Length: 367
Image 1: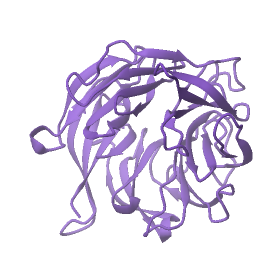
Image 2 (image 1 turned 90 degrees about the vertical axis):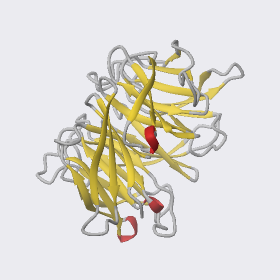
Image 3 (image 1 turned 135 degrees about the horizontal axis):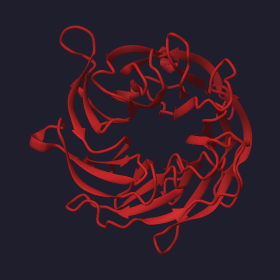
C-alpha cells in the first residue's frame, strides 16, 4: 500500500501535512511530517471541496472570524499548500464548515450565526467577500451559565438519513437543541424544526444510522439516541448513556467527537466511537466504543481505549475499509494512528508524532 496523506487542523497558525505509511518495506508503520502551511490564527476545522479534493477550506477561530481556501498539489505533490482566498466568516470563532459544489456553509460558535459564501473550484475560489448570515434563535441562558449564555453552533452536517442534501442539522451547544434547516426557493437556509435535549446537555456533534440519530452531549458526556423521522414529524427519544464507564463530573467539557463508520468486509459489525477529553488518568484520554449488536436504538459501551493523549478532540477514520483512526491531543501527546482490531471492538496504536512536531491538533482530513 502506498503511503497515505493526512491534513491536520490545529490551534496553532498552521495546517500540517503528514505522511502515514502503514506497510513500509522494513519496520513498523511510520508517521512523518511533510509540510506546515501557515494560514492564520487557530485553523481548527478543515473540509475539502466535494469534487476537487485538492481544494481545502479552514476556519480561523478568532473574534473577527475568517475562512481560508488552500490549494494543494503544487508540483504534483500534496506536501505544500498555497493560500488562494480569504473572506470573513460572518461571525466570531468559526468552528465548523461544510462545503458543497457551490457553497461554503459556516458555523460561528461565539456569535451564534450560520453563514454562507459562494465558492467554485477555480479562481477566485471564494466568489464574494460578504457572507449571508442567519442568527440562531436563543430564548434564555441555559443551566450551564458559563457555556450556555448564547447560541453556540458546533457542527453543520447534512441530514445523514436524507441523501437529497436538502436538510442541515446544526447541534447548538448553547441552546440544548439540534436545529433542522432546509433550503428555500431563494437558495437561503431557514430553520424548519429542532430537537430538544436535556437541560445543560450541550449538543456538540451528531451521527446517524438507519432511522436512528446519535447526538454527543459535551456538557453531560452522554450519547443521546432518537428515532429520527423526516420533517415535520418529531424525533422520538429512545435512551441516553454516558460516554465513560465512570460517571463524569458534570460540566467538565469531556465528550468531543462521534464517529460511525460504515460496515464493510473487514469490519461487518457496527460500532460508534466517541472521544473523551481532560481525563487525569496517567494513560491519558479515552476513546469509547459502543456496539449496536442489540439494535440501532440500543448502543452498548463495550470498550474504552486509553490513548496516551491529553485533550483528545477531533479524530477521523481512513485507509482501506476505514482500517485506521488518526487522533490528536490538543494539550499533549501529539498525533497518533490506531488500527482497528477485534473486528472494530478495539484499537491498537501503530504510529505517532510528538507534540513538538505537530502542535495542538484539533481535526483531521485523509487526503
